[in-house]
Length: 345
Image (cartoon, rainbow, N blue to C red; front, side, top):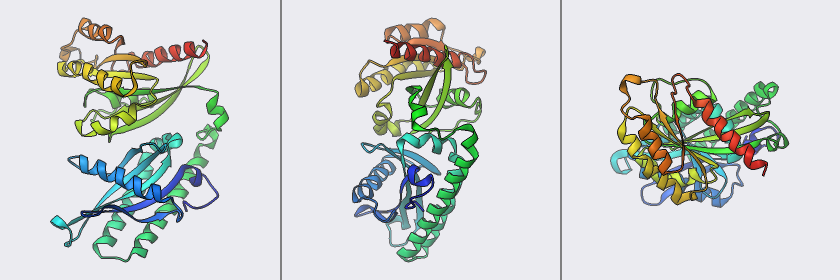
């Protein structure tokens, strides 16, 4: 259970909520764990989720990861729809929400498939209960079952990773230099594939659109010093524009990515730069990446054109390939050198 005082789940999971999206009253937390979850969280978090769902043309399917501004938390969210003849359009809406501590979010990103399968199962069960006009205690029981299975999965994953120190002590993490990197640019320029190639060496040939932001991490050694990168892969779609300023906050470095086979993606870079500058100023370290350099016959942007934009914005310039991994490690060693240099001053 989320409310247990033992095990890893108490540290990692701060609460579970099922919220009903009422067309007149807005989002209402219907059941939650632990039972003493603060009223502030029960009111604010569903409202953040509801506003996101209302601002998008299509509600995200599957498990979404959404920041909760001002609370150092993120929410794992599975939206629910169910048949209800009493609602406008005959469809009711809600969400299963799991609150996690932002400092531990990489664990959930690393094992997102396991958590997604679990949430899919219980979201379907809750949807069926709602369609059958089940009592509130039945919904609460289903949320309790989700809590118990979530705890079991977290503890199992911890046991699997103990030998690899996947859950290191805070003191160990604090000994490493850290760098938050925001990776931004238009949709379909290869940001996610670029990040995956660096963190997991697993190029994804099929395009997988991010849901607002994907976060991953990797520690590398540069000149004998470990540097931990926490990489925020920010979605390029317009529908996520309202959330981006929260994703930029705290970035040490920003990587602007364009597609060497698409001139419009380079033309957009200045707009992306201004978007970041409005949120965090212009003191960040920055690089411009011309991605997909392996597609030689399709390239329409010359090195000179890319370098000209980089000089104008005071950015370093790289040409990369998420397919062959060309120059990808070089980008992060470039930042590692800068972070180490700053720490020595």
